[in-house]
Amino acid sequence: MVLKDKKILAIVSAALSFLGAVCYFLPFAVVDRPLTDSFSGFKLFAELFSHDIFNGNASVMSIWIIVAFLSLLASIVFALGIAPVGGKGEGLRLAGICSVISAVTLILGSIALSTVSRGSGLALLGLSMTGAGWWLALTASVLSACAALYGCSLAKNEKPPMVY
Image (cartoon, rainbow, N blue to C red):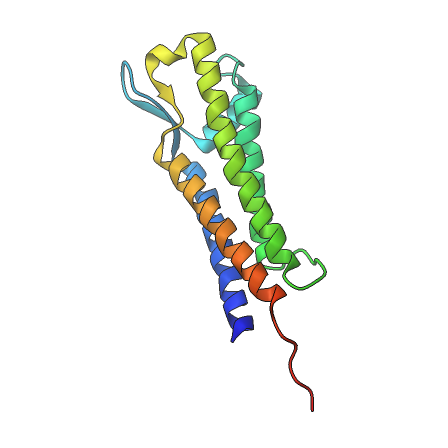
């Protein structure tokens, strides 16, 4: 029964990480004034290379957002066991760590964006990382980490089957 719960938690963790990755299509950064506008997570990716949105001042923010996205993808790979890792529950442990990294880097990207907006005068426009995509990706990352790390703890506490 415990093994079945571990597999379900691995699937739940991977599904939540996938949901977090899909949220990059939704608005991440929102500008409130003079007109309401938003930028998706993938548009913030492009800022690193194109320098269109913030005139090249937000490359640190873009790097944090890219690391968060790649961490979500790594979490999916480890949770589903696509990448072979040794030991009981090691894949789920790595998936949990990747999800935690994703959540932390999403927060760091938000801090970097607020620092850039204050330094360049964009704070007057009401620029913030409060879009629905950012909140959903952060929530999905945290829940994915919880599911993966709980599944890892279940795997570590499994008793081997009795052989007669």
